[in-house]
Length: 193
Image (cartoon, rainbow, N blue to C red):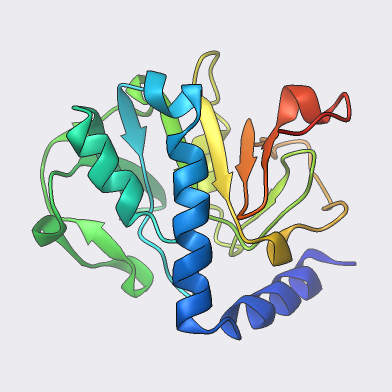
């Protein structure tokens, strides 16, 4: 199935989630990530501002700040993303595509981020991700370096058997749903947690 069809189908599915269902499942997903050694070990974490019934990230923000982690959110700058250190919701304003973006000036280089929590429309068990089609995350993720953990948060209904992957696509290291945590090094061996 072409990416456009997959995107349309899964966006429609997610759109029909009731608000309380989205909130409840989002809390489960965030708690699963908070329990991982990868999250506990990350000193600098990038989150996203959820749109269109994406998995919420507010609990991750609160916990990261309480743990003394540096937290950044993406902001569109030209055709790319820059990550801006954020200490509270009052620093966020609608930006590109009406997504909340940080207003601060302190940026953190992508290379300095230990964990990047990445939004997506669909994911597969190998960690491949389908975004919204604008390529902002694809352009930044192609700079994947050893030691940085890429995390996809999604509802089970966003997991598909396989996504069409291209050479430039970068797979997630962890996928977390309301039901499970998939680690890609283990998923390749058929193991899940």
